[in-house]
Length: 350
Ligand code: 13P
Ligand code: SF4
View 1 (cartoon, protein in one colour):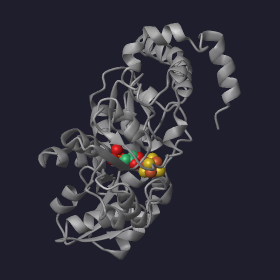
View 2 (tube, rainbow, N blue to C red):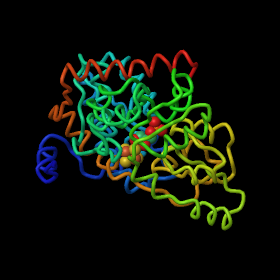
View 3 (cartoon, rainbow, N blue to C red):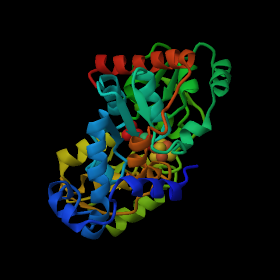
View 4 (cartoon, protein in one colour):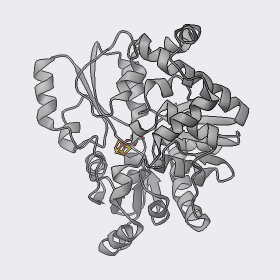
């Protein structure tokens, strides 16, 4: 576990990180992208970190790839590229800078390293995991293969490199249904997210989809009853879910899609009121660019995503701690599964 006291003392010796209203004012263009969701007092605290990170990025020839669930101060303040899991994987293949700082969870950093092994991929906090990645091992994949001989294994990118390496092809929430539909065979094994698999099974009835029993601790908390009650209290609210939610929750929604699908849907539709049934930062990150939309309702925080903070991003750039390494034999096989997904997504026009 990172020693935050030590990190703070070390950073304070090299950077002026005290709250700075003048600097915050000078960086008002950046603040304007998040001033609906971040208050000016907090912005005066964040601005010195944002300025220091952006300066260090240039000096060290680094880029920051950030997932849509990062906090607004990371998403709008320091990220060079933002996106969903598929977009970040594709962007990782294109990075020319020497260093990638992955603002997301560990499997995302591993995926970047697998796809662009010559780069240094830094993780601001190695403990930022994922309940789905923790749910399954390569041995579990082999057990599924024994249960369903000959069936292809489609594995969500939210997994370790070893699990990807044991699979035939990866998927993300933005291409899972299309990949399952396009594969040969009547039976398709989907791992590790039981809910994503059940949602895909409904969308691709021509296939028999069988699944592993993993789940996302953020999305599994929602119930269909919550959604129905929310609709009753707030008639007219557009309800938008992520496909990691249980299928009975997705069935109550007006739209379900990956985080980039959610952003596109809200931008296209511009509903008066929207409830995003997903991680809390999703709505915060798009609130300023959609002033006409009132984002309402409960959201759930991902404890892993929220381990990534401005302080830890500055620390990782300052020290080069901690680079992600993947055993080359494992990385080679995992790369095949991820590249198959990227190639198939392109062929399918996704
Ligand atoms: P996407 O951004 O690919 O929809 O994934 C959501 C998620 O939970 C990532 O951990
Ligand atoms: Fe994993 Fe869920 Fe957090 Fe995404 S939101 S990192 S799937 S626990």
